[in-house]
Image 1 (tube, helix red, strand yellow):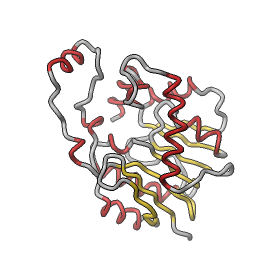
Image 2: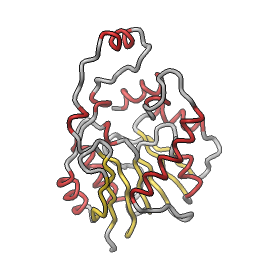
Image 3: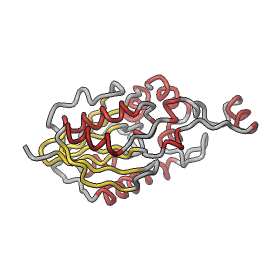
Length: 232
């Protein structure tokens, strides 16, 4: 996954963080503005808030579209991504975010983040691109490890297997990819990703000391699950 996302960061990081944008012609103002709107939508749907004393972990930060907003609301943010190239761009875009620690992840855990050290974990449209649902479930377990008692996680996952199947591209699209005028790697497992079932997710969360507090959008590509670390 690291190699794939490093390549996408070199190709068009704006598009591959937010594929609603036009490929190769990114509207940077829209890109950064939409980060705040998407974060607010996620928090509203989850029924949670970030407080000024909170320590937040962001899983899959990319070049920091949501990170810069989180940094204005929380005491500190640990922003994790599997791609070192994405993180290099994030650091270059945000040299003055003194309360953000950029962390290169290993692609399956929250290694580098201490146990019981976070008040909240956030992940926005990231797990949809993980090719193996077992890895997504491992991240769910890891959120239970790093959350403090009473802490919460708001995570986007996919419950729709159909959207993760490779589809044959038409001649125009294939030609565009060949000439590098359209996105590369859209048939790669690291982009296609995988779906997870809510039953196993709830079981893993329970084993990690969390309750599945809320589900929004079940059965879709953009299912939001809210997990809460049980008091200890």
